Amino acid sequence: MSLGILASGSGSNFEAIAQRIAEGRLNASIRLMIYNNPDAKAAERADRWQIPKRLLNHREFESREALDQAIVSAFQEQNIEWVVMAGWMRIVTNGLIDAFPGRVLNIHPSLLPSFKGAHAIEQAIAAQVRVTGCTVHRVSLEVDSGPILLQAAVPLLPDDTPDTLHRRIQTQEHQIYPQAIALASLLPIPTE
Ligand code: GRF
Image 1: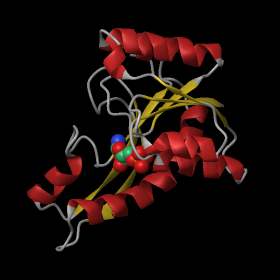
Image 2: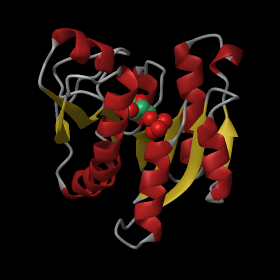
Image 3: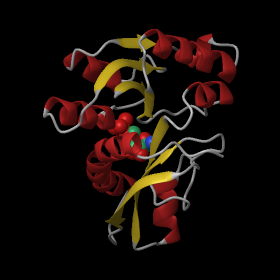
Image 4: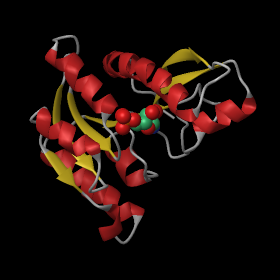
């Protein structure tokens, strides 16, 4: 599988995937990381793994569509088959989804369909659930929707802060994202 990574932040999921590939446990190669935020730690991690990276700063594009078109072109130039959103904090458009049908993946820090959106961890704490978790799914136009590939459950403990809970969830994310990528390649692409 040839993978293109989209990252906006710390990039720990990217690194977990790169690590799994390096260990020979995921038959894939990461051809390019695109990041949108000049300060993203993910870019430093890409350097450490000697993976090509490209900054596409969303502020320099006139629309979401224009940014996504640049992403599609960059990934297609590298013959990328699968787009892996690893902490990508931009809403994606049809242009990206249609260029890689069923092959855009995302990870979200809740057990979807609970707690969609950018504040899933805070919402789980506020709701006083006892179990939350993470979900890898294929991306559809509606945010944090689309067919689910894998999930992992994580307990919410009485003293949890958003930080402690996020760390516990991320430990699971790093396990299930590489597994879900492998699984996605084995399953038929869903037709809508
Ligand atoms: C993850 O918790 C993921 O669920 C969410 O953004 C976070 C990204 O973390 N979508 P990282 O940049 O991979 O460390």
